[in-house]
Image 1: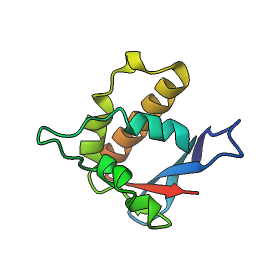
Image 2: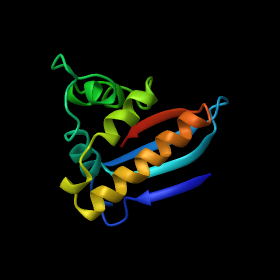
Image 3: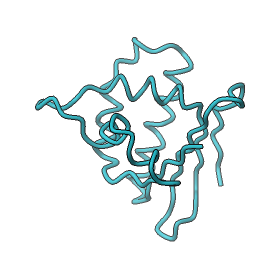
Length: 122
């Protein structure tokens, strides 16, 4: 399993693990980040045209999904990629930009390989 660890230096802070899993449930890539990176990135995603949250931001803003379950499966990876790609990279510092770009790559690889994307909040 490949591990992308951008959590170093935040060991006393909350951790979010995002994993790519095959159809057998085996983790292929584990992305470890400080929850603060994820919080900031998700807050850059705008509501849809009707002013409603959808996809991952909906679960984030309603404290459901990975906040309620030990692990949570993203049901619409394509939508999540579109939302992430709509974020203005110029508004992000270097560390946040690095996290966002790694997350986009991971999601695209997951979609292209017909894998599942899971979130685990610790």
